[in-house]
Amino acid sequence: MKKITMNIDGKLNNKKAMEIRMSLNDLTGVTSSDVAVLEARAYAYAGDKLDANAAVQRIREIGLAADVVREEYVGEWSGGA
Image (cartoon, rainbow, N blue to C red):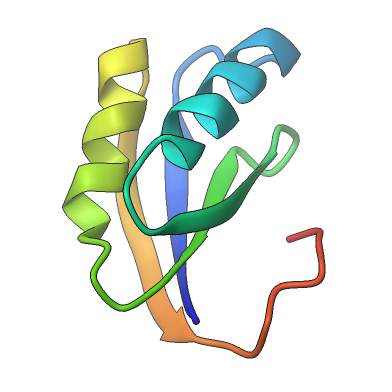
């Protein structure tokens, strides 16, 4: 499973975090996502076909700046960042 870690820049709060999670979860291939508000990071867990730029674009559409920090392969996601 691929894990994409993204930095978020802008006014991130719990409401925006929920929007980000819902938007990322709507992307094809995403099995789960999480947002760490205090760290200003978003995490998307997906299969190999997810393009990190598509995930970043979803965050930008919500009105926040974002960039990819890391793409890595991990075992099955068990929740949390």
